[in-house]
Image 1: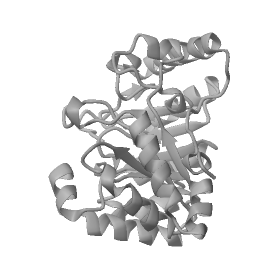
Image 2: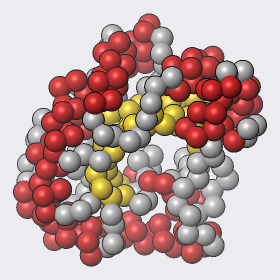
Image 3: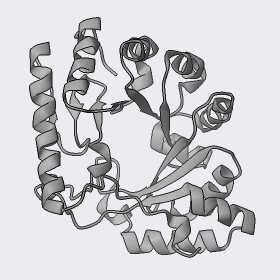
Length: 283
């Protein structure tokens, strides 16, 4: 989380707390890039928790967790999401650029001493790792207090169209792997495995998005990216803003929420999540 401009000052977080209260937002989520690159992140969280009851989450690749897990917990971090694209060390290095998989998995195990319940593992599914779905299920279902969240991915800078999979393909493979689990693990899958598909956009915010991504589950939180931007959808710059002065924060957040609430109204539903619990598909 870049801080070279001095964005994350005490005044910034004091205003953030006020804006969250005024806009009836209960969650803050640090994301975008790698938030643990910001060494002062535990201090930021501590300040927010000291002055508010906001729920605070972090999405990380897990590489630096060994250095920060205790500090983050003591600061008051409520939720932690860890993104892992593969359990193969060679593929991990190819995708992430570091030989760090062993360390990441150890860091996840070390989180067990803290009261993060649950820890969420985010797994993007594409042709390069779809053969590992069974490995992911067996490995993480064998551990306590961990939710596994598989999700579809769209073509991006690091993933070509021909390497993506459609929802039907992923769902069928996921169901097949769940059916092949032992009875005990299958029961755990019913409770702890989720799949977020790409569906036809149902919200106004999505219908104009070239990414065609459901982003309702992101809208409940103020999402702060590595460079200090606020975002409703990380995949579309249209739904983000970067303020130049603190007095602009509330106006910007309200504008993002207006996009979201207009979509909820059009959708006719107040449900802000679109996760399917994969273990229930063939329970």
